[in-house]
Length: 272
Image 1: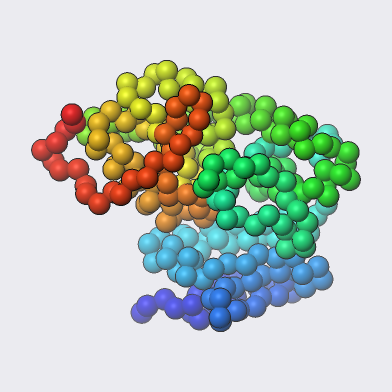
Image 2 (image 1 turned 120 degrees about the vertical axis):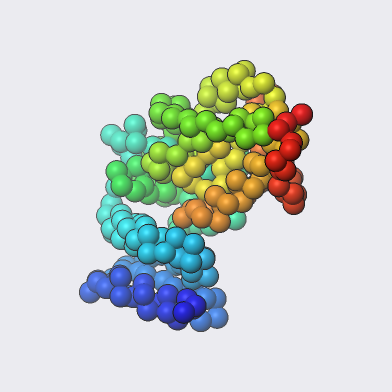
């Protein structure tokens, strides 16, 4: 039987029963919201996106969503400080359309990155993290520049584990530790310069969602199409999608690659 928004709403309600939470369904926007009864803080989910992931991955997708919601709601209900936690502050990559304020109207701190992406800043809490807002910085006497400097230093200290796959004469390197900062590795300029130096062709990078980054040593025209197909697939599957576009890394700058991946490589073309 086809999964509908009403059926998914009921499934999520069954999964997320808690005396301290309340759930609401917005039929017009096709969204489902879970929030704390006392504070009104919560999360809004777009049901068609959940259904799409459920149809491709089954109950595993709902398990992941449930864990994400429970952890996020728990974090929301606690007060966390920056002072003394400097080593736990990291940059996180989000789509340019990501909200600029919290549900309570607090302005989040962010930096413009590309036309497709922004850099937000987070306090790591173990299983999850909390995005940093301007009020938090002011309360603790931090400047935006200090926070950016700390976050930039910390992202360079994150481990990198690349898995290589060669397709039609192009080398693709995948990193996915699912630590919440996989896409943030794109901000590690030392890493990017090392990869650029080792490339036989052009260095292209894709950050389709928060939990993966793809580096591509593009050595022929097929490579761009393959990367575009990979990026689109990962983008559709990600819990926190970022962008389906890929970027060319040249002269320490990221330029979006506009690719129409309409054709798949044929078996008789192994590279140029």
